[in-house]
Image (tube, rainbow, N blue to C red; front, side, top):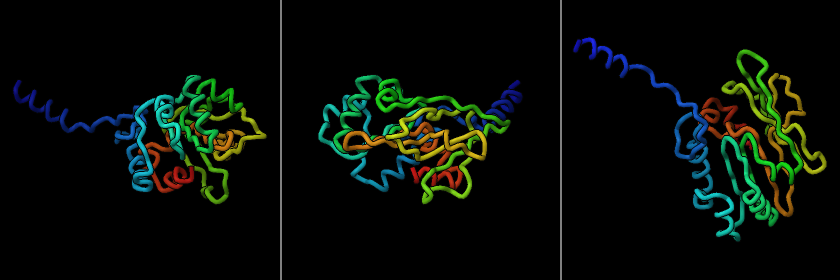
Length: 219
């Protein structure tokens, strides 16, 4: 019995650890959907100019109303409530940049910026999604391929007069320009950039290959 137990314990010890695919997007997580890599890269590039905010946007901006620059907020979903969204918009309108990456953004923001989000499902066994940046200077020779999700979100409707499409996504390699997943809109004296693909900033996506890294850098 002792020998059997010892063998069992040895087998359990030598078993490969299961990969944790939880979409935490936490800056200190090294798991695939953590964001330690992008956080470290941005820290190296911006140094003291980058501030890690651990409080809700409304609370932080209320106490730091005079701060200027870019507010980058990333999560699996960003369903901002009315108070949070209005505070961010008020700050952006003063000449700042708001960059949000999430699969959703809440009703206040969608109503204010006139967009609607829909879900796009994979159309093949491999569950491949294909992405491309629109700017010719940033556009890769081949679409970026992502195959770790069965569905993604995109902007089905946008305010075409005031919105610039920066990136597109599709479940076919021939990407439809209608499926925008990164957009930009001027707001007051500032601008807002929205991405429905937060995975572009994850450890897994950035480290998977150099094309992915360039895609994220282009954003």
